[in-house]
Image (tube, rainbow, N blue to C red; front, side, top):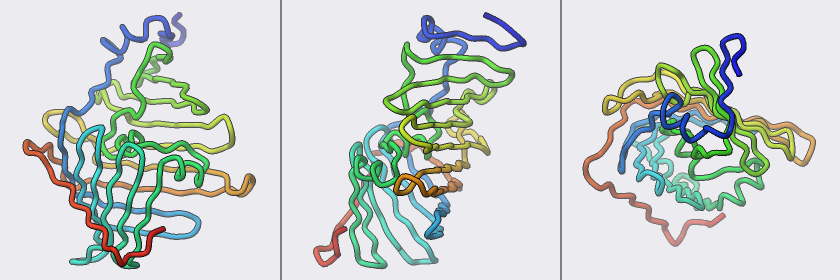
Length: 239
């Protein structure tokens, strides 16, 4: 079907489409490091920090946060099933399973979502059940996973994810990630800026909003194996 310049591919030929015209140019690496600026804002707090990030693709994300010059505020690690933060300022250890984190914010969080936020790859792999559409200078991949409908907007020129919108059918919660400032990393486009906006319901009726603003200063694919040091002092309070 073709109408007004839009092309609907549908489900049947999804695998062929993604292999040819609709292929997303993912960043190939085993280990990656970056120096990054973070800004976090919610209804209750605002925080900003510089970060060192180390990553083993599809496995581990390690980070070190410095809110001021020469001050290490926290470090942590994200695995396939959990998030651990060692807060050195308040001498606390914060530990979340993704199940717990998802319940607190009424939205489905995962390792793949955090990895996508940092490197700009699609958090959900394509399948033959996805819907593919082409509109002007972008193509769109719509995915239904559990209670989520995820719409991925891919740039024709960049061949990268430029916008992601996820809506939950269980509530009014939405998540949007915008990727901008594309530069080359190992001769492939890489988004040096990302903005995540989460709108969610608190206690069933009160609306909350949280944003994470990310700006990479340096991104490097590492040839050597990286270390992920995380020491938890026994005297720290666990939460």
